[in-house]
Image (tube, rainbow, N blue to C red; front, side, top):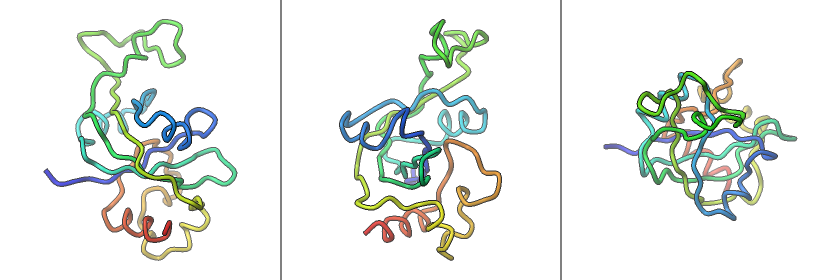
Length: 153
C-alpha cells in the first residue's frame, strides 16, 4: 500500500509539537467529525506521514512532522463518562469514534505560518488553504508535503 500524507491540527495549548517531541509518541484522540473519523478509521495507516499544525495559535502554522505508528482503533474517550469527548451513543461493541497513534519525527526550526503558505503557488490547491476548510485531519498530496519540507529547510 502506498504511503499517504496528512495534516493534523492541534491547538498548542491542548497538545503541541513540543509535547509530542517530549512524549515521543501519542494517540490522536478527540476527533468528533464524521469525515475526519472516516479517515482515521479507514484511510490513515501505519507508515503514513503527518504535518503537525498548530491551529488557534499566533500565528497558525505547520510546526513539524510525525509518522503514523498505529492504524485506526476505537477512541477510548468516547466511553469515559465525565470526559469532555464522552459520547453517550457510543458502545464498546459499536464504537463511533476512532484514533491513530503518531510518533515524533521533526520540529521545524521556523514554523511555516498559514500566511506564508498562502504565498506558495505549489500549495494553491492544498485543503488547508481552502476557504472554510476546518477539518482537524486533512489529506495532503505528496507534492504538497514535499513542498512544505523544502520550505522548512
